[in-house]
Image (cartoon, protein in one colour):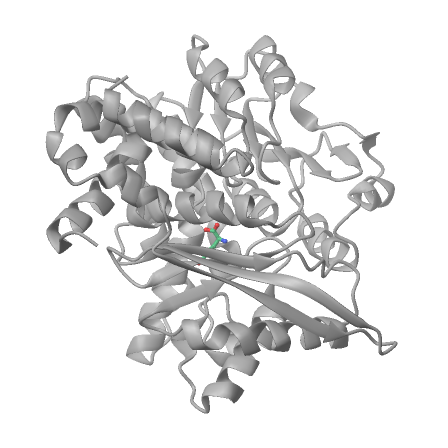
Length: 449
Ligand code: GLU
């Protein structure tokens, strides 16, 4: 490995040893762009890698709120504005008890390259809180969101930083956050959030965008291999919004998702999550209780496997869509033993680095990285910003058409970037290289700061 790349990775390992998720993503991205650093001394001269590792700025704030019994609670809020070289900071908010700087920084760092891959002018950011909205009544969530926004509103804006949802932040939370922002600022500025409700400036197809985009990307991979999605079986983890979009689009295209998973285990439905009733129930079940997927098995009479992940099932395609480090070495080995050809990451960093490396080294396994596969979500967020700026609303077909084009381009650009450096059809390296080059070029052109 290039000395400079190595020295930055080592510095990050030492300095951020207490933020393992962040170290993991820096190692993953920087080791795959190493050939680019080696070929272009300008990057080292401008110390691009060390600059990329440090967020441009970050905010950490106290969030106090009272529950329905009048008891006071204190949480921590975060917003890491990682890199604004190519556009206003953009990225979701995650509300989950395990949120801490290491999670925020891994997500903000990843977001920078992912957003660059969309080809749209959006920088990278991430934020959130260790607050857990699961099972909380609306009034408590509203008070929390209002308090969160009281601290954050000064630091965001349509040309500054545009947050959105992530785990634990859906339509309900976005509504309360945007409402308080509008109240505090005394103006509309509706481009300041994406994933908004349709009644106040949201984009058609935004809820579906990440899942649909993942399937459009998958179709490009299959096309590259001379195959089609029709008749394929897919194992998915998670049962949130993203999994729902994957189920819906794959059903439309004649494929079927046969597994979903939750913190309690996974379900195996040999008929696939394909009918309108099943798709609708997924949303209902998730809204009622994000911790259990078992009710699906009870309702539709299929298998539920408690405490396990679905990675031992024999399917054509695997799509981890739940959370980080969902697929570790033991699961990767099962996937390889089952001779599954397509490993398509969807959630942010769903694979540990050793498992990812292992899968990439397997003959006949194609690995697609999440920062490319799930980029359609934030891509459609950028389309929502455009619609808001232009004060108009595109039809679902218009949004879908643009999303499709975006995913085709991301796949083509990633494949071309890997090819350029003699790496073959390496979508992981290609996505990192293409995203890195776009951000690094903008940083070089803007000078040192
Ligand atoms: N949280 C999503 C992501 O990981 C969406 C971000 C956005 O739309 O800004 O990309």
